[in-house]
Image 1 (spheres, helix red, strand yellow):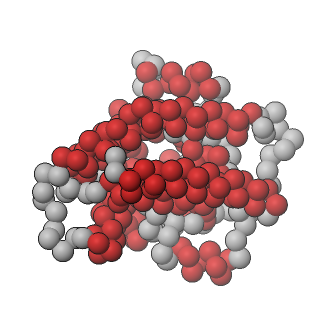
Image 2 (cartoon, one colour; image 1 turned 180 degrees about the vertical axis):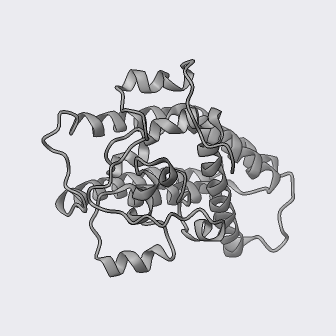
Image 3 (cartoon, rainbow, N blue to C red; image 1 turned 90 degrees about the vertical axis):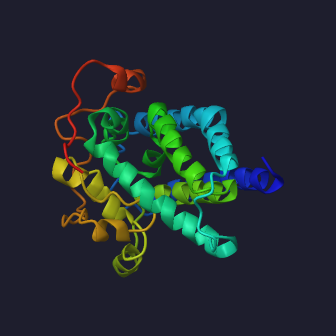
Length: 267
């Protein structure tokens, strides 16, 4: 990894950690939906989510970063000649966000991928810790899928690391329980995914779960007809329709169980 890559990797970790910590504090000072302090799982839930973060961080260091670095080094060469410098970075970020929209959509539609992604959706409340609750299997599968695109389009590692940092910023924000002024949130929602958009994606009603797939920029759902008309409400029930939350060991083993895990059947 070159010097720029090392610097971006270090900056990504520090900046993302600071951002998530700030959101964690802010959403508890100004929550949009009251936190379930009186429920038995009130503190067990964020602790469980942070355990997923630790596992994902180890997987990232062991697999994701080396795979991304190797893919970026292949430089197969189907990259537009003009995609260099600042223009190249903008191109890479838009392209990767467009592709992650379709990857996210596939995670809901294909039963094998949903087995892993369902773990993220089984959370019964949303806050910033939900943004880091991903099964290590999904982390690995996502890295492998992205590696192919990185190699074919010769996307530089600096763009990949910048995109991953933006993903952490975006997912922390739109999973958070931070209360925003309504006019500000409406304005932001035309450009980026906001909590009011993404909370609907976690609604415990399958037709809403299978909508609002965008991650950073909100335009993809409008372009491809997957934006839900449901509005977020304070009493919106979060989770997976017909499924219940489980403890950490069961969640880690869940994708490998023999039971059926229903998913939608069409993209």
